[in-house]
Image 1 (cartoon, rainbow, N blue to C red):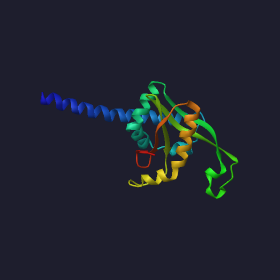
Image 2: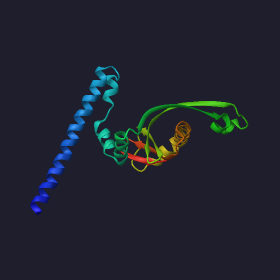
Image 3: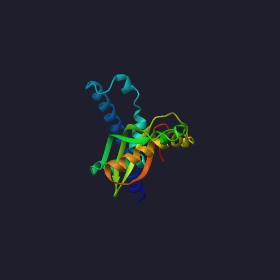
Image 4: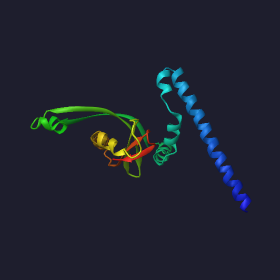
Length: 173
């Protein structure tokens, strides 16, 4: 029985490495196809780091997003426009209630149970332990995205997540 267990462990390890190798090949082929279809330049393609993509796909967030995708509950590249008063955007404009339109594109969100999970990808160069810098930089942006999503869908955003490719990690905001 110990021999069977050991063989099984070796097989699973071999399979997981083989799976990564196959997936990496598929990603490279997809990138080249996008270049050939002129949906991406070769310069843009050269910036894609396959190992970072694989790390994301195998992360807890990647697994959750895959589950949502399989259930057709994953949404990407969602444009939005919201209005804010000038004073909300800049305290030096106190008393100025003129509306300012903010437009953007939400990287991704998905439905989980009855609520939404908002995802924003970041490629900023940070080191491990500096994750709070991303929260400080992008908290207001994600709050605006969450507000827009709630208005568009009528559903509550239960989580706002930054996925940092630099540290291969999801960061709750």
